[in-house]
Amino acid sequence: MSPAHTHLKLHWMWWPALGGLVVGVGGYLQPRALGVGYDVIGDLLSHRLAIGVVLALLAAKMVMWIAALGSGTSGGVLAPLLMLGAGLGLVLSPWLPGGSPALWALVCMAGVLASVLGAPVTAIVFALGLTHAADALLPLLLTVACAYGVSTICLRRSIMTEKIARRGLHIYREYSVDPLETHHVADLMTKAVISIDAATPCAIAYRQ
Image (cartoon, rainbow, N blue to C red; front, side, top):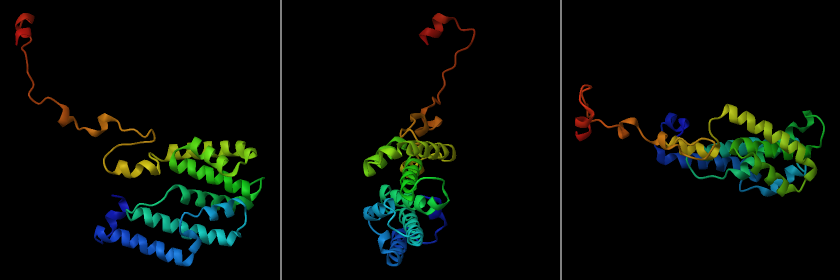
């Protein structure tokens, strides 16, 4: 259960309905924010959308995505991250040095993907496989390394393991569970301790 759920006064049965309401309103205001959105991602990477349109799309998509995941329902992670990352790069491109808006959309998309998922190599391979922009390899490596480094320092877990960790399994970035983290000392300790007097000879102690 997430911290947001503990502050809601509604029964847990209504949480998915509340998330669906937010998604519905956001989709009504920004229809392109609904669905997987690969066509929108392609437009962002090709710089075919105006900055104002991108800002509205990002705001709607972010609110919808947070509400959907926070309500406890199953939702996508990969495509929303690609859209948010590409949109962020496109919006920031006028203030970033060098390169084209399409390049910044690509490297920001990979950076967001690497930092949130905790998978830097996957982000680089995915970005190159999606765009075949081999000339963007060096900016991709630098951006992904910085983004992943910052997220590793600031975040204990990735989005892929946060829900599992909140259920009591202490999973961190290595995607494994420490067996010692899943047991209490009281479950493993021997409560009936057999004591032997220090003056007892070894032969007698061995027979005991």
